[in-house]
Image (tube, rainbow, N blue to C red; front, side, top):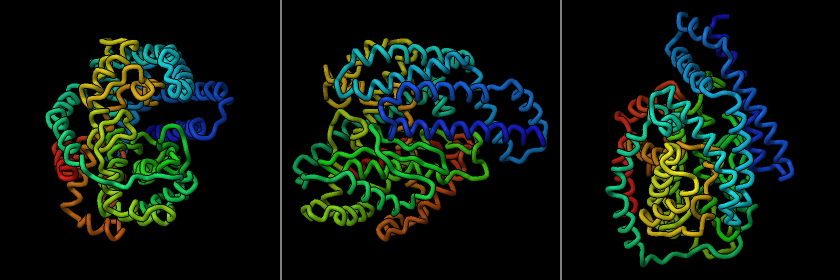
Length: 493
């Protein structure tokens, strides 16, 4: 067995432990009774340490050096480079820090579930201080090794090759046109009369509707399922994708499009190349590219008039007792393109969403770089919400800085991926439209050619290329925020 083959064997073993951890994480969020929290936290921390030991095994360094001298294919070279990057990232952190961060994150996240509804910032802060301290410790270690700022080192975990200097430039461009576009759209829609959902929409029927839409989007239910959790997510592994959503029985609109969003994540996972399964090179390229797929499904495809016609037909079948006018294409289109300055990121419309991301980016950047302290976050959040959206969250941390799950376990550097994903999605759709009659295909429900483009250019490429190279190969140019501006301009103005 060659040194490269031994490395493949090692990383596939590691991936099997990651598989177990992913399913335990899904169960913790969707199924586990509250009384199981302590034992689960300890088990997952133990697993995290075991995986860290495998990922940092001393013999890997010698195997990497030996494998580099072996005759490898281009794909194997890319695979080896991905393994080395993974190893370098893992070996930076001592086991004690890995275990402490896992425990602190689990404790903070579990308490957050009850603290957020109670608007208990002081209770949350007591746990979150430790999460921030451990995340800063991690960021300092990574920054010292990479020669960059602490926050840039954390961003690199989610967006390899991206820096805060680039993000400042990208978001700076968006800031120049976003506020005025939001105001213009709000003014344009001021007299729009829409039929709003009212009455009772049972969660069981919403799930049945969501399942029908997932089937339209060609989700493979033999390798995945849909459940319910406090915070919607897509987890599991490519051969066992676990999607969740949340339902409000007072309306069906949010959960339905949330399912479309998570299905984009799920289709990407299911489309990753089998020949690289279990290896770092076989994973999604970055969180921004992952988010581009969910936002392609939700924003580029799901909120198009042609796709909403399918949603309208399916929704009326499942809720036939309600006013048919609610399910007209024009009405649903209006509901799904309403621009409202709101508090909650996951409920935000497509146009105001980048403001929510930029706010979080600016706070977490300064927090990890040590320029602000956890105690200052509510006040800063309120200030930036007023600046970007004209809303105050003073005394309302439940709808302010406590609303997201990401910071509870120290996932700092993650938020920029959401808006990067929207930009990539707009750029991908612009390229697809140059090659395919997208509107006609969607109207007919013939989504196969669109998914084939995604499979060929994004899904099957996994992490074989850098993010920039992936985007250039797919669209002919690197990330260009102008495509997002053009898309939003066309849809809302």
